[in-house]
Amino acid sequence: MKKNVVRVVVAVVGLLLVVGGLGAVKAGQIGSMIKAGESYAPPPEVVTTSKVGAEQWEAGLSAVGSVVAVRQVTIAAELPGLVKDLSFDSGQAVQKGAVLVRLDTSIEEAQLAAAQADAELAKLNLERAQTLRNANVNAAQDLDLARARAKQSEAQVMGIQATIAKKTIRAPFAGRLGIRQVELGQVLGAGTPLVSLTALDNVYVEHFLPQQSLSKLGDGQGVRITTDVYPGETWMGKVAVINNEIEATTRNVRIRTLVENADGRLRPGMFVNASVLMPDKDQVLAIPGTSVLYAPYGDSVFVVEEKDGQSIARQQFVRLGQRRGDLVAVESGLTADQTIVTSGAFKLRNGAAVKVNNTLAPAASATPKPSDT
Image (cartoon, rainbow, N blue to C red; front, side, top):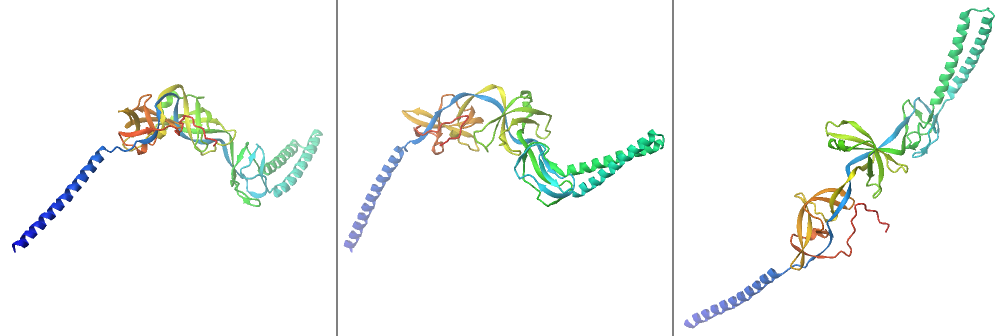
């Protein structure tokens, strides 16, 4: 019995020694891993950088506007009739006075022939009455009646001729036609629209500026026009009209700019960016737009600083101003000649080590041009 107890005790002690040994080994391994984790440093992130530059930007009052035609009408039929001839196609450029549509005038032409014959007879009767009156054969009243009858017949001829002329529909000014809304053989009612006509040589750009800008505005002031439809293209115009009323709901003033549009690329209804140019230039700190991290709690950039012989990225919150091409102005948060991360900022955290490689860094410009390659 005693031998069995001794065996059990020995077995338990041996098991405890084995478990303790394993525990000591594991504890040593975990301790080594903790020490290794504390001493581990992630490899530096590869980024591109640039200097914060002090630049002079042309000052301007910017707004989003829309293109408005200087002259635009919807050509319509003034009189009812049957379309006898169509002389235009959709999108065609026409000159002033060009014939677009001819309506059937067969009835009016017959009426004109009868009226001309009646007018000829009235003219002969007037001549006879005048001869008789000179011979004192008829009364003065007979001459007056003959004269009135001749004028009435002549007016009737002119009225029918005017009706025939109105059934020949012409372009009121030179321009480009829109989409045709009439077909050959169609019976038109008075006022039926046929096609739109727009003069595109010059267009207006209408936009709004705050009422505080009124003291800086004047007729003839230069305006730069750009649009996303034609990236890199610029049109120059001049302020033509400054509205004499302020919008009651927005307290903005409407500006109308006249822009030369010889190539016709600016179309009525198109959204554009308009910047009224000021005589003075603004001193700004400019950085590439790609360097900014936008967030609801504030915009920030990463500033690269040297610490213990290593490049460290420090997050810096900034307040941004106006944009010019690839660049954005910084109103506060940075100083000139600081180095900031321009690409790769999304993978950084505050205090992260970085490695600068500007070999493939894209060039940022306030007036970028599309590449031909």
